[in-house]
Length: 230
Length: 258
Image (tube, rainbow over all chains, first blue to last red):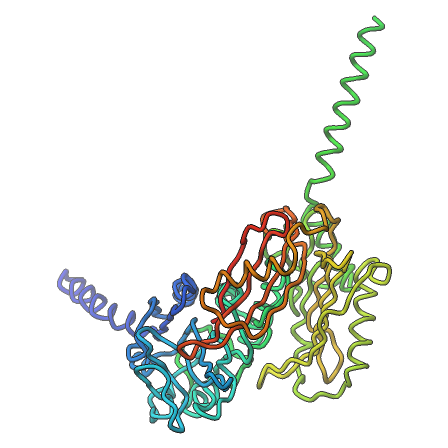
């Protein structure tokens, strides 16, 4: 065979390589309240199962809101929403008092607000969204239900927490949850086993990580790497 | 000659002591642990596959996959301290068992699997029906041993399917108590220290439990475990979890709410 054929084949392979890499479904992970390194650890686990994953600390909500449109997997670890009058849930807090909220009835926490309800079909490719925050699956009459709104916009699976979760147990749950997903467990199994993992770390107890709620196809695994079904 | 015999006997006694002392803390083998896991499952032919060895502050575990979940075998004692049953999670959306029936089922399982459950002073510290959304619900029962008002590491957790009554997961920890159970720090002093970890907090609710915890590998510490809730600031709940050494007053953990 002539040398130019080898060279042509090599060039075609080189050209195809970036396309193959960029075809990996994206995953974005956010640590937003002294929760490091959970986003980085999640990123490592997702990369091991061939997601094109990245992580950041103290991102602005506008960044996450924008990137969500292209995500297969979205993970947030930080504060949830809690009003002075005890209405709670419906939002997650990013840097500079910026929030991603399910919706609004005229209540606007913080300085910048971005609404899941404003997405059209933008997040229908999302396979899994995880909101590790206090009351992130709790319905708030002011700002709606973050998990349900995410599902309404087409995500396949969404996980939030109905109760209070604190930083250390959140870290424990997150580390175990993503590790178990990496090892092929279903979302429901990983969430449940991760909560039991946390029970055995000091101090004994679930401390809120047992209040997780999953919407959608909870028996799915993250492998093989893919987008959600739309 | 007589002196040689005495020296030889002394050497023998020392050697036997060293060997037996080492044996007390030596881990059991994986094969032995596998047999224990099969015994626990009441299935001598069950496919039990070694997955990994895991090290926690409260001890080391051999972790086995059972095809339907996992079994954690204490690497020193061979006791099964944790088991999960994936198939038991199926059809757990409908709540068919009432609380009394669920608790009776959980208690019966605890008595069967946890040696000496009925003899210890096990207090039911939690009994909940917990919703996991589309993934269904589970009844969750937690017992902790209480001695002189102090919670010990001896605990049993049974989570079960509210529709079928099948056991979804089990945890059973059994340890000798190796630390004093009288705190030098009072509850009020502990609460005051905890409040100091959240400057400016306006406390709305707080609990403080004296509890023996494994704060370092194989080391028990008598602590105050405090949950403190405050009024929200900037739309974020204030407070969190604080763990304080009940003898020295040292703050061992501050974990704010997310």
